[in-house]
Length: 100
Picture 1 (cartoon, helix red, strand yellow):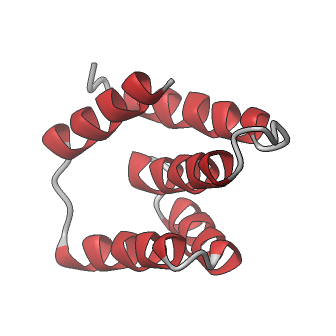
Picture 2 (picture 1 turned 90 degrees about the vertical axis):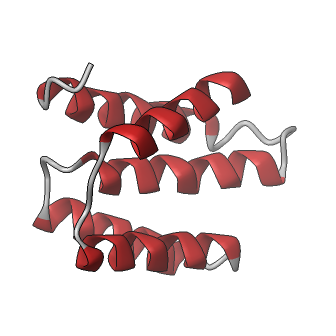
């Protein structure tokens, strides 16, 4: 699962170009994740998805958020389905943009 996650990250970073405002929004959500402020991160990414539903960055942020929850306690599988659901949605949006 880690290998797949890193492939998605690399692909995401290589294929997307964002404006500074978009970068700042996404970066603020990532910063919340790194400080374990998951509710704040979710608000940022959900708001981004609502404002730019065709941009996979918001879906990727939600996937990253769930990934962190999974990794904090690998024995707790309650977040696994959320991670995979968000991952699937993120890849759907990528495909709709005909990126791969």
